[in-house]
Image 1 (tube, helix red, strand yellow):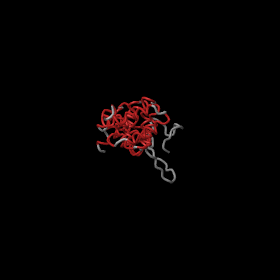
Image 2: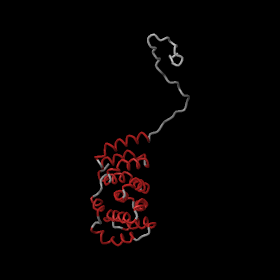
Image 3: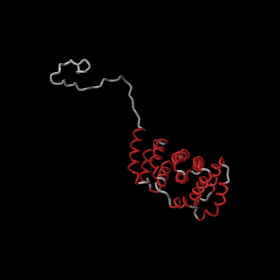
Image 4: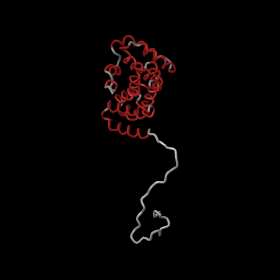
Length: 217
């Protein structure tokens, strides 16, 4: 897996704390509008704002929009992340990580909302959230692995690489999930009797003396 898929870009790190210089002038007014937008309209407005941003500004704009929503209505973050991700799948990890950092208790729901809107970005979503919220890395990874079981191994590997300090715990989760997500194979036909070793009687014991014991006869 390429390193660029597992780490946050420099632009994203800058975006979490503030707008990029080129985006600031253009989107301050939009953020003010978001803060005055009815909660029910926030997802659509947020998605529209991100989609309209210039390519070089999209990460910064996404982070700024999420921050504006968090300051107005934290409970709207899950639906806003889902809307942004559906409209702009390439912003899935940015939206999810920024929202999770601002609302840690909603990290799992935010991660799942982003993954459902952009299934192809599930590994990047897991890694990005782990980067900004290491304490929740394992639980978020496990939730995403349950959502996308065929990608479970890659999800845990991405999180382990993104946060080396949690690699051991994440690897253990991966092993557990692999077992839990396994399959049981069956074959048609009669059930065959098993085999067992004939028990050895104790010294002085009369063969067949204990009616409850199987002497292998």
